[in-house]
Amino acid sequence: MFKHILLPTDGSPLSEAAVEEGILFAKAIDAKITGFCVIPLHYKFRYTAQIMQDAFGQSTEPDTALEKAFQAMVEKGTKEGKRQVEDYLATMIKSAKEAGVDCDAFYDMNDFPYEAIIQTAGHKGCDLIMMASHGRSGAKALLLGSETQKVLTHSKIPVLVHRKGPEKQKGAGIFQHMLLPTDASELSDAAAAKGIDFAKALNAKVTGIFVVPEHYPSYYRTGATPELKKQAEEEWRAYAQKHLSNLAAAAEDKGVACDGVVAVSDDPYEAVVDAAGQKNCDLILMASHGRKGFGAVLLGSVTQKVLIHSAVPVLVYR
Image (tube, rainbow, N blue to C red; front, side):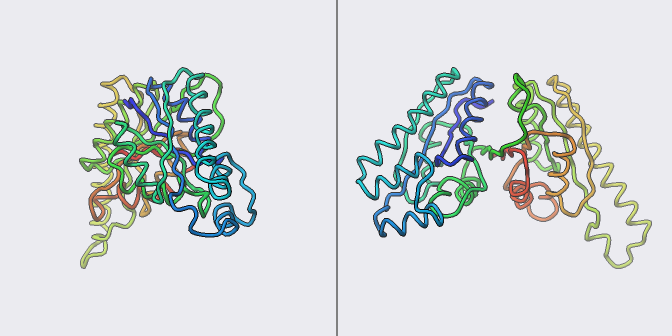
Protein backbone atom coordinates (compact mmCIF):
# COMPACT_ATOMS: atom_id res chain seq x y z
CA MET A 1 0.00 0.00 0.00
CA PHE A 2 2.72 2.44 1.00
CA LYS A 3 6.11 2.31 -0.68
CA HIS A 4 8.10 5.18 0.86
CA ILE A 5 7.63 6.49 4.41
CA LEU A 6 9.01 9.77 5.75
CA LEU A 7 9.95 9.53 9.45
CA PRO A 8 10.51 12.98 10.98
CA THR A 9 12.22 12.98 14.36
CA ASP A 10 13.35 15.50 16.94
CA GLY A 11 15.27 12.98 19.04
CA SER A 12 12.76 12.94 21.91
CA PRO A 13 11.78 9.54 23.39
CA LEU A 14 8.29 9.77 21.91
CA SER A 15 9.65 10.66 18.49
CA GLU A 16 12.26 7.91 18.66
CA ALA A 17 9.53 5.40 19.53
CA ALA A 18 7.69 6.48 16.38
CA VAL A 19 10.87 5.90 14.36
CA GLU A 20 11.30 2.41 15.84
CA GLU A 21 7.70 1.54 14.99
CA GLY A 22 8.15 3.11 11.56
CA ILE A 23 11.06 0.79 10.80
CA LEU A 24 9.01 -2.25 11.85
CA PHE A 25 6.05 -0.98 9.84
CA ALA A 26 8.19 -0.46 6.73
CA LYS A 27 9.58 -3.96 7.06
CA ALA A 28 6.08 -5.42 7.34
CA ILE A 29 4.87 -3.75 4.14
CA ASP A 30 8.20 -3.89 2.26
CA ALA A 31 8.57 -0.10 2.09
CA LYS A 32 11.64 2.08 2.26
CA ILE A 33 12.04 4.95 4.71
CA THR A 34 13.62 8.38 4.86
CA GLY A 35 14.61 9.69 8.27
CA PHE A 36 14.46 13.44 8.63
CA CYS A 37 15.04 16.10 11.25
CA VAL A 38 14.74 19.88 11.22
CA ILE A 39 17.02 22.24 13.11
CA PRO A 40 16.35 25.96 13.58
CA LEU A 41 17.82 28.25 10.96
CA HIS A 42 18.03 31.31 13.19
CA TYR A 43 19.32 29.73 16.37
CA LYS A 44 21.66 32.63 17.30
CA PHE A 45 19.04 35.34 17.63
CA ARG A 46 19.02 35.06 21.42
CA TYR A 47 21.50 34.38 24.18
CA THR A 48 22.39 30.74 24.75
CA ALA A 49 20.93 30.49 28.26
CA GLN A 50 17.54 31.78 27.18
CA ILE A 51 17.46 29.53 24.12
CA MET A 52 18.27 26.49 26.22
CA GLN A 53 15.63 27.35 28.80
CA ASP A 54 12.98 27.87 26.12
CA ALA A 55 14.00 24.72 24.34
CA PHE A 56 14.39 22.30 27.20
CA GLY A 57 12.22 23.66 30.01
CA GLN A 58 13.45 24.64 33.48
CA SER A 59 16.68 22.71 33.12
CA THR A 60 19.26 24.01 30.66
CA GLU A 61 20.78 20.55 30.26
CA PRO A 62 19.92 18.79 26.97
CA ASP A 63 18.75 15.19 27.29
CA THR A 64 18.67 13.88 23.71
CA ALA A 65 21.20 13.66 20.90
CA LEU A 66 19.49 16.34 18.84
CA GLU A 67 19.19 18.69 21.80
CA LYS A 68 22.94 18.33 22.31
CA ALA A 69 23.45 19.10 18.63
CA PHE A 70 21.30 22.22 18.97
CA GLN A 71 23.34 23.33 21.97
CA ALA A 72 26.55 22.65 20.05
CA MET A 73 25.38 24.92 17.25
CA VAL A 74 24.79 27.73 19.73
CA GLU A 75 28.03 27.29 21.67
CA LYS A 76 30.52 25.81 19.16
CA GLY A 77 29.18 26.81 15.78
CA THR A 78 27.18 25.30 12.94
CA LYS A 79 29.84 22.82 11.82
CA GLU A 80 29.98 20.95 15.13
CA GLY A 81 26.20 20.91 15.49
CA LYS A 82 25.75 19.50 12.00
CA ARG A 83 28.28 16.79 12.74
CA GLN A 84 26.28 15.67 15.77
CA VAL A 85 23.03 15.66 13.77
CA GLU A 86 24.67 13.54 11.09
CA ASP A 87 25.88 11.10 13.74
CA TYR A 88 22.37 10.84 15.11
CA LEU A 89 20.85 10.16 11.70
CA ALA A 90 23.55 7.58 10.99
CA THR A 91 22.27 5.53 13.92
CA MET A 92 18.79 5.56 12.37
CA ILE A 93 20.15 4.30 9.06
CA LYS A 94 22.06 1.56 10.89
CA SER A 95 18.94 0.44 12.80
CA ALA A 96 16.90 0.30 9.59
CA LYS A 97 19.53 -1.69 7.71
CA GLU A 98 19.83 -4.14 10.59
CA ALA A 99 16.08 -4.70 10.21
CA GLY A 100 16.46 -5.19 6.47
CA VAL A 101 14.81 -1.90 5.55
CA ASP A 102 16.15 0.41 2.84
CA CYS A 103 16.77 3.79 4.47
CA ASP A 104 18.34 7.16 3.89
CA ALA A 105 18.31 10.10 6.29
CA PHE A 106 19.16 13.76 6.26
CA TYR A 107 18.36 17.09 7.91
CA ASP A 108 17.30 20.57 6.91
CA MET A 109 17.70 23.95 8.57
CA ASN A 110 14.36 25.69 8.68
CA ASP A 111 12.44 27.81 11.19
CA PHE A 112 9.18 26.16 10.07
CA PRO A 113 9.59 22.40 10.55
CA TYR A 114 6.18 21.45 9.13
CA GLU A 115 7.01 23.16 5.84
CA ALA A 116 10.33 21.31 5.63
CA ILE A 117 8.59 18.01 6.35
CA ILE A 118 5.94 18.49 3.67
CA GLN A 119 8.46 19.73 1.11
CA THR A 120 10.76 16.81 1.81
CA ALA A 121 7.93 14.31 1.47
CA GLY A 122 7.24 15.75 -1.96
CA HIS A 123 10.85 15.91 -3.10
CA LYS A 124 11.55 12.34 -2.00
CA GLY A 125 8.34 10.94 -3.47
CA CYS A 126 7.03 9.71 -0.11
CA ASP A 127 3.46 8.43 0.06
CA LEU A 128 3.15 8.43 3.87
CA ILE A 129 4.41 10.60 6.73
CA MET A 130 4.65 8.86 10.11
CA MET A 131 5.34 10.99 13.15
CA ALA A 132 4.63 11.38 16.85
CA SER A 133 2.32 13.82 18.58
CA HIS A 134 1.67 15.20 22.08
CA GLY A 135 5.15 16.62 22.45
CA ARG A 136 6.59 19.23 24.73
CA SER A 137 6.62 23.00 24.42
CA GLY A 138 9.49 25.07 23.14
CA ALA A 139 12.08 23.81 20.68
CA LYS A 140 11.75 20.33 22.16
CA ALA A 141 8.45 20.10 20.31
CA LEU A 142 9.99 20.90 16.94
CA LEU A 143 8.37 17.91 15.27
CA LEU A 144 5.71 17.08 17.83
CA GLY A 145 2.44 18.53 19.01
CA SER A 146 1.75 21.71 17.08
CA GLU A 147 4.08 20.72 14.24
CA THR A 148 2.22 17.45 13.79
CA GLN A 149 -1.00 19.44 13.67
CA LYS A 150 0.40 21.70 10.96
CA VAL A 151 1.61 18.73 8.93
CA LEU A 152 -1.85 17.17 9.19
CA THR A 153 -3.44 20.41 8.05
CA HIS A 154 -1.22 21.01 5.03
CA SER A 155 -0.08 17.56 3.89
CA LYS A 156 -1.49 16.20 0.64
CA ILE A 157 -0.50 12.63 1.49
CA PRO A 158 -1.66 10.38 4.37
CA VAL A 159 -0.22 11.01 7.82
CA LEU A 160 0.13 8.28 10.45
CA VAL A 161 0.19 9.76 13.95
CA HIS A 162 1.98 7.38 16.27
CA ARG A 163 0.88 6.58 19.81
CA LYS A 164 2.75 4.25 22.11
CA GLY A 165 0.22 1.47 22.63
CA PRO A 166 0.39 -1.71 24.72
CA GLU A 167 3.21 -4.15 24.10
CA LYS A 168 2.39 -6.80 21.50
CA GLN A 169 3.28 -10.45 21.54
CA LYS A 170 6.47 -11.37 19.79
CA GLY A 171 5.80 -12.12 16.14
CA ALA A 172 2.49 -10.24 16.11
CA GLY A 173 1.77 -7.98 13.16
CA ILE A 174 2.42 -4.25 13.41
CA PHE A 175 -1.33 -3.62 13.09
CA GLN A 176 -3.81 -6.43 13.66
CA HIS A 177 -7.21 -4.75 14.02
CA MET A 178 -8.22 -1.50 12.35
CA LEU A 179 -11.19 0.69 13.11
CA LEU A 180 -12.72 2.32 10.01
CA PRO A 181 -15.09 5.19 10.89
CA THR A 182 -17.42 6.21 8.08
CA ASP A 183 -20.23 8.69 7.50
CA ALA A 184 -21.13 7.47 3.98
CA SER A 185 -19.44 10.47 2.36
CA GLU A 186 -17.32 9.93 -0.74
CA LEU A 187 -14.11 10.71 1.12
CA SER A 188 -14.80 8.43 4.07
CA ASP A 189 -15.82 5.64 1.67
CA ALA A 190 -12.49 6.06 -0.13
CA ALA A 191 -10.67 5.93 3.20
CA ALA A 192 -12.54 2.76 4.18
CA ALA A 193 -11.66 1.13 0.84
CA LYS A 194 -7.99 1.97 1.41
CA GLY A 195 -8.30 0.62 4.94
CA ILE A 196 -9.55 -2.71 3.62
CA ASP A 197 -6.63 -2.93 1.17
CA PHE A 198 -4.28 -1.99 3.98
CA ALA A 199 -5.73 -4.68 6.26
CA LYS A 200 -5.37 -7.28 3.54
CA ALA A 201 -1.71 -6.39 3.05
CA LEU A 202 -1.08 -6.80 6.80
CA ASN A 203 -3.40 -9.80 7.28
CA ALA A 204 -5.42 -7.73 9.76
CA LYS A 205 -9.13 -7.52 10.46
CA VAL A 206 -11.33 -4.42 10.37
CA THR A 207 -14.29 -3.00 12.24
CA GLY A 208 -16.48 -0.40 10.60
CA ILE A 209 -18.26 2.18 12.76
CA PHE A 210 -21.08 4.53 11.84
CA VAL A 211 -22.17 7.10 14.42
CA VAL A 212 -25.77 8.29 14.34
CA PRO A 213 -26.96 11.32 16.35
CA GLU A 214 -28.74 10.89 19.63
CA HIS A 215 -30.42 14.28 19.40
CA TYR A 216 -30.57 15.26 15.75
CA PRO A 217 -31.57 18.97 15.41
CA SER A 218 -34.60 18.27 13.21
CA TYR A 219 -36.08 16.32 16.10
CA TYR A 220 -36.86 19.65 17.71
CA ARG A 221 -38.59 21.29 14.79
CA THR A 222 -42.08 22.60 15.43
CA GLY A 223 -44.60 19.82 15.57
CA ALA A 224 -42.12 16.97 15.94
CA THR A 225 -43.96 14.22 17.77
CA PRO A 226 -42.45 11.28 19.64
CA GLU A 227 -43.59 9.09 16.76
CA LEU A 228 -41.68 11.21 14.23
CA LYS A 229 -38.61 11.17 16.43
CA LYS A 230 -38.74 7.40 16.69
CA GLN A 231 -39.21 7.09 12.95
CA ALA A 232 -36.18 9.30 12.31
CA GLU A 233 -34.07 7.24 14.71
CA GLU A 234 -35.07 4.01 12.99
CA GLU A 235 -34.28 5.48 9.58
CA TRP A 236 -30.84 6.59 10.76
CA ARG A 237 -30.08 3.16 12.17
CA ALA A 238 -31.26 1.41 9.02
CA TYR A 239 -29.16 3.73 6.88
CA ALA A 240 -26.09 3.13 9.05
CA GLN A 241 -26.59 -0.63 9.09
CA LYS A 242 -26.99 -0.75 5.30
CA HIS A 243 -23.78 1.19 4.82
CA LEU A 244 -21.87 -1.04 7.22
CA SER A 245 -23.23 -4.10 5.40
CA ASN A 246 -21.79 -2.70 2.18
CA LEU A 247 -18.47 -2.19 3.93
CA ALA A 248 -18.50 -5.78 5.20
CA ALA A 249 -19.27 -7.06 1.70
CA ALA A 250 -16.34 -5.09 0.26
CA ALA A 251 -14.06 -6.52 2.96
CA GLU A 252 -15.31 -10.06 2.29
CA ASP A 253 -14.50 -9.65 -1.41
CA LYS A 254 -10.89 -8.94 -0.41
CA GLY A 255 -10.77 -11.78 2.11
CA VAL A 256 -10.63 -9.44 5.10
CA ALA A 257 -12.54 -10.24 8.29
CA CYS A 258 -14.95 -7.44 9.17
CA ASP A 259 -17.65 -6.55 11.65
CA GLY A 260 -19.63 -3.36 12.16
CA VAL A 261 -20.80 -1.10 14.97
CA VAL A 262 -23.67 1.38 14.93
CA ALA A 263 -23.01 3.87 17.72
CA VAL A 264 -25.44 6.50 18.97
CA SER A 265 -23.83 9.71 20.17
CA ASP A 266 -23.89 13.47 19.73
CA ASP A 267 -20.10 13.41 20.10
CA PRO A 268 -18.87 11.15 17.29
CA TYR A 269 -15.21 11.36 18.30
CA GLU A 270 -16.02 9.88 21.71
CA ALA A 271 -17.87 7.01 20.07
CA VAL A 272 -14.92 6.35 17.77
CA VAL A 273 -12.34 6.43 20.57
CA ASP A 274 -14.53 4.27 22.82
CA ALA A 275 -15.12 1.72 20.05
CA ALA A 276 -11.38 1.45 19.40
CA GLY A 277 -10.88 0.56 23.04
CA GLN A 278 -13.81 -1.81 23.32
CA LYS A 279 -12.85 -3.67 20.16
CA ASN A 280 -9.14 -3.73 21.03
CA CYS A 281 -8.24 -1.97 17.79
CA ASP A 282 -4.62 -0.95 17.37
CA LEU A 283 -5.18 1.57 14.54
CA ILE A 284 -7.89 4.04 13.55
CA LEU A 285 -7.94 4.92 9.84
CA MET A 286 -10.16 7.82 8.89
CA ALA A 287 -10.53 10.70 6.46
CA SER A 288 -10.19 14.41 6.97
CA HIS A 289 -11.26 17.60 5.16
CA GLY A 290 -14.83 16.46 4.78
CA ARG A 291 -18.12 18.24 4.37
CA LYS A 292 -19.78 20.77 6.65
CA GLY A 293 -22.65 20.06 8.98
CA PHE A 294 -23.65 16.62 10.17
CA GLY A 295 -22.58 15.24 6.81
CA ALA A 296 -19.06 15.60 8.20
CA VAL A 297 -19.91 13.59 11.30
CA LEU A 298 -16.63 11.64 11.17
CA LEU A 299 -14.52 14.05 9.18
CA GLY A 300 -12.74 17.35 9.68
CA SER A 301 -13.16 18.54 13.26
CA VAL A 302 -14.13 15.06 14.43
CA THR A 303 -10.92 13.64 13.01
CA GLN A 304 -9.08 16.35 14.91
CA LYS A 305 -10.70 15.36 18.20
CA VAL A 306 -10.00 11.68 17.60
CA LEU A 307 -6.33 12.55 17.06
CA ILE A 308 -6.25 14.39 20.37
CA HIS A 309 -7.98 11.74 22.45
CA SER A 310 -7.05 8.44 20.84
CA ALA A 311 -4.77 6.08 22.74
CA VAL A 312 -3.86 4.20 19.55
CA PRO A 313 -2.23 5.39 16.31
CA VAL A 314 -4.43 7.27 13.84
CA LEU A 315 -3.88 7.16 10.09
CA VAL A 316 -5.39 10.23 8.41
CA TYR A 317 -6.25 9.48 4.80
CA ARG A 318 -5.92 12.03 2.01
